[in-house]
Length: 304
Image (cartoon, rainbow, N blue to C red; front, side, top):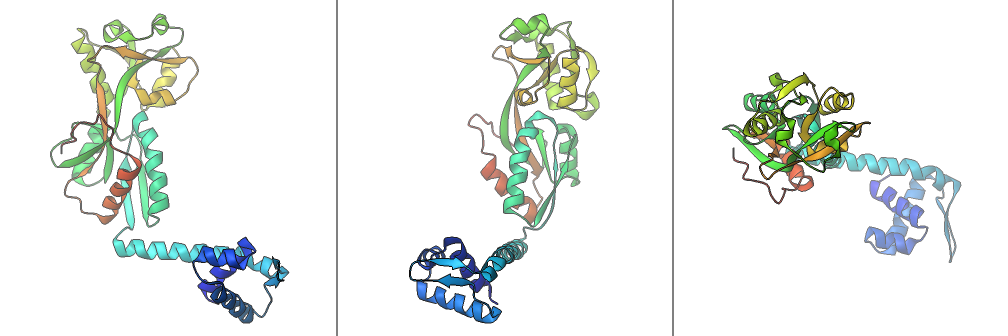
């Protein structure tokens, strides 16, 4: 039993017409008919009932259809895996991520890698904020990290998203009635943010914006991730400066308002990797990232 004979059988079984099946396979009808005859001879059964007008599956043909589809799919997977090995597109690639920005980009990347690079396993490591991600990429314990610019020397970065900071606040807060909120209005307000120890770029940008507005932020609570931070906002613990992508997290009693002013920080979010990393698997993933995570029009030079 040859795979090309099974492929011909499946095409005829699905089209129920030899001419259309031959066109689909880009072969002439006569060789296709010969393939079916050879397959029937090999199996010792009749697979199709044929008249001058119709083609239909026999019970034996019906029984063969699903196993034939599975065999062809398995054969295709084998070809992809062997080709991936030949190209070096096998292995594991670790990806560090944290925060709402990566939550929107990461699924696009993982789905595309799983589809296009079946020989590569993505190892996802959450709660890896910019500072930690940059250190781990530099020392080789992490292949790729979602990080905010700028990156340190020896790391190459490619911007995948531009994130403007917004304010998350309880829907009952007086500032929720405003269409936009100047950073100066946050003076004295209780704020929830990421832990200082995690070296979050969002926290650093928030603190800097407050200092530039003439006050030190009043941080009353830290949260390990965006979801827990917004849950604390909804509970009335405080307000939170977050990236605009956090709007995709829907929690009761939490609303978002733009921060007013032309000097509100915009964070370039990038994929960062060690410049000297020559892993074929890593660069295969980066090629996929180039396709599914297009460079934003307003992205700055990544540096590295």
